[in-house]
Length: 83
Image (cartoon, rainbow, N blue to C red; front, side, top):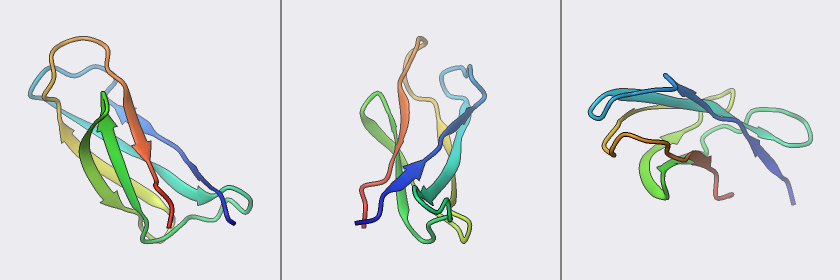
């Protein structure tokens, strides 16, 4: 069984309700660090799926998301559910 590693970057760090933020990162093979191509990465805000993206040839994914929740601190995460 192969294992994957996922990175995440959220920008900007602060956004107003209705504004856009970008979630991006890389999905790579955990052993070789080679990017995993054509894999679906789902993005969540406070356990609600807000985006889904397919990785490119280098394992990179990116999604621009509309901030729909109230002001405060929120948990943003990217998830790869495996093949």
